Length: 90
Length: 295
Image: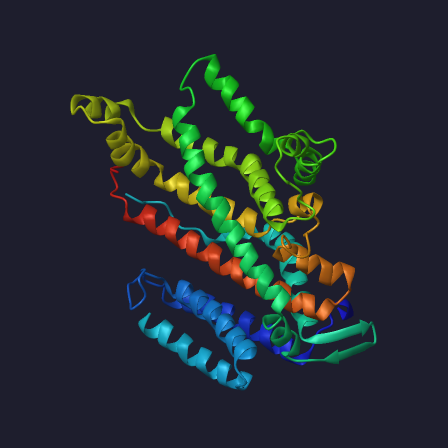
């Protein structure tokens, strides 16, 4: 494993992604998702919304890191709120 | 009626594939992420850099220029190849030995490996021995892809059009063949013009294959490496240095693993975004279709 040069932040990052996927699987087994149309222009399932949320989170982080001097924690907070909005009303 | 018993154990059959993908894609990608936040000098000498590489990559002027160049290249070749491919598909013979002969002739460029295509065009455009380079020079055109950025661009676009328009043409050809004859009969009864047949029968029926053609051509051209590398080496200057070549120079040439890992991830995210948009569009179009196969 040492060749993968793990660091604590990346380990936490991948663990939370894995936890999200596991959580989504359990949620899906307990109550299967129903495709619906929210404020997004397309009808989506729960998994679609999570994917859209994570992908946009990546671009929010890139934007904040690259083109502003704001802290990365602000990007994380904005992404988390955006993900919740997306999951609930998207 | 769907009266099949759902059996989730079938998912176990996907496991071997999952293991394979884990080793060929997921674990390497995780490693790239790890490299992108560190300065790795050796097995025991590495320093955490946080977001530094991402910041410097996003603000690198050379990379921004390569990105814009890449986007323009992809848009230019799409704007040429898609209409040209439809046009070729429309005039291709529909049956008999001519159809087979034309299909084989058209497919030939697709069978040639990328770097061979680069070599072919490199020789083809040389001023001393190449047919095109020599011919243009004899006609009095000052054509030189190693000195003139415009010439290099025209040549690369021409090369890509030569190599990949056949793919678009073949996809459109198969799309056109699948239109039932009844549509054309109805059009003849209505005395529809050739343009009307194209606009209201052929083009709508081609939408699905065209989306696939655009997706494939965009992805291919966005990741283009070997052809311009062999033909121009990214030059003159950096006039034809596209994204993958900048990345290779950084990762293999200069061994800047941290910055190139950060850059790879940005590149990957852009491709992921575009692929997702195309994929969603295709799926959306299929969903909107009425179930009885109407247009």
